[in-house]
Image 1 (cartoon, rainbow, N blue to C red):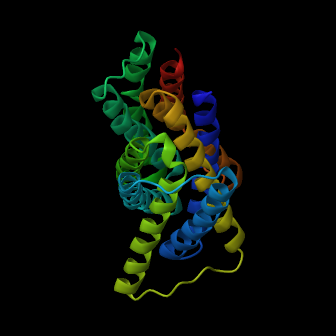
Image 2: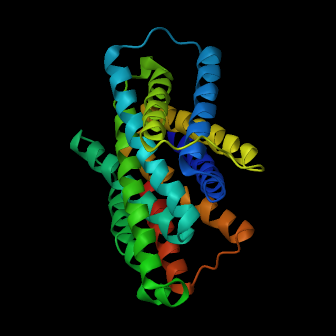
Length: 280
């Protein structure tokens, strides 16, 4: 059941990332982040009321706040990368880097993945090299490839810390850690807006897709939290990192971004490795 929840979480993360990046390309990034986070908080509060949980422990709220700060950094890098760079590099790179941190955490905590999962991990290693092959520079320019990789790595570091922090919350905390995470991320965004003296502005046509990004992202967070509480973190994190698949597919359909053969090979190698890791 945990892997099924993680699979649907990956699907929703992919949809949310594409919508958020698409909106960030047409409105101010901080405004898109702020509105999407507010929408996510609303979804979390509604889900909390429906599922019904008691008062959370301070430890769980602390992990939630830490997850919120890390998560909003990851989203800022991912949305910015999708809006300004190459989706087929930013999204997979963020997924692979984001999976490493929780996987290592799970192993350090005593989780022992099966041998086939280790094989899958090895297959994922050359994937980033293929995704950033120099041949890509012919289509987008070397600087664009390096920029996309930078966005992806920074986003992955934020996501990895986010997943790890959420997994440390006790099952009895329910969805309270996600509420705390959203409060923390919204506070960080508000402080940045005030510091930069940047007006909050969403351009016409960007409201719905921004709200969709926030709602899908929180739904994905809820599924990941439930999955991590009922299965191995090392496996759940890898399955969740499948989110680039819908993101890149949507970019191909709506943004008409081409996927060169070499990068496609890297993308498929990453998905193959992730698929092997998911096997028990």
